Length: 483
Image (cartoon, rainbow, N blue to C red; front, side, top):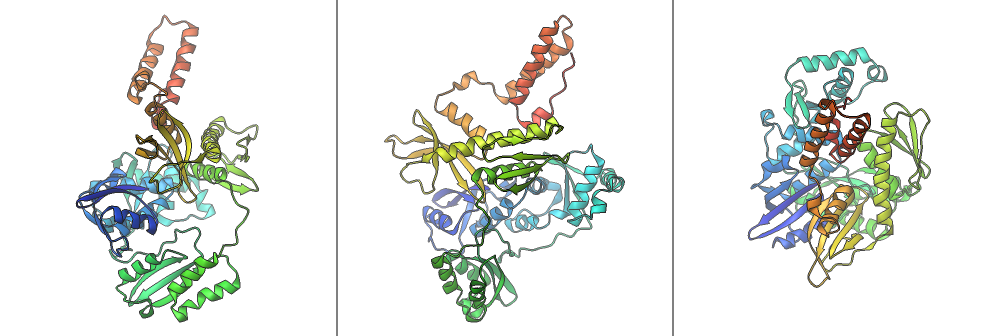
């Protein structure tokens, strides 16, 4: 997700990308612009993630920024780190306009990111998968060959250090310009679309996913430079799993060019895809979270099968319980359990929560907790997952203001507890303070020869407790205590 403060002098507003055309139109109104502007442009004042800060003080197409948001939202964790790592490297000189940043999303194969340089086989596998896009079964399991490729990469000495790891440029992989700066490359990102339709005008094309908001079609025509859809070539690129009757109706648009009419028909008829058994929010969210942590997850009725890196199958049930093989390694089990428990906690809270009542709130949130005029709320989106936010009630108690937004449930709960006064902030230790405390505990355990065995055990438990309260990266950096 991209969060940007956009200015159209003298107005400013915050926009989160990707967003729907309806949401964007509302924001254009807040900027004092025509809500049906077909090519809106604004100045970026602030933007997150910080790697995109090269766009600050630049006038950009808001539709292009929305497209970038969709591309980033479709990335897995590894791709996102790879993308942000390249953006953070001034030495790579990809060119930092929005056009080049969008093109980077299509050219990640040119850049290999290695986060850990200890395992040569894994380095080789990551590198070859990145460059080729695939490996045969024999290649994937060829440890010797993969280790050699990993060694070649490290010995090249061309790695550029970033906070995400070392970035290597694959000179043999060209940087292709997929986005010409005007028309967007075809990208399917709407999970509920029924059909993808290409609009062609001269040698340019635009993809629209139907059904959609009419303004999306109008914008596509505008980017193509076409006055009317009648002047364009219409091609049904694909249809989802729908009846033959509706597939034929959709295909007729290639002849009639009644694209707006077809769009209205699909919306009015409420065409639905042939779907499998509905999946619960908990199952969807825990699947997303586990896959971001590199676990393979598959649906098995109402439960989930999670395959560990050690090839053990762990089953997660709908009620938040787990079935684990007796010999499953404790580290794999602990990681899955941690993700599952946290996800089950906020999904359960969300399921029981009532809608948040607040004047002027355009989106649907549920109130997870409220204390001392402070609100903890959540919003769920099937494509993007959960968003958590803390607000203060307005003086009359009818609205909310000063929102702090989070994707991390634990961080949102902590902010709510402090903001509402449930916890005194002065009684909490900061991350820096905890790190210093841990260093003191480790130093005492290693260098104080007068400690009793009971004292050593106590310090060991204290070290573990402090480490659990630190971010994961600092946990992994924690030194072993020798007593």
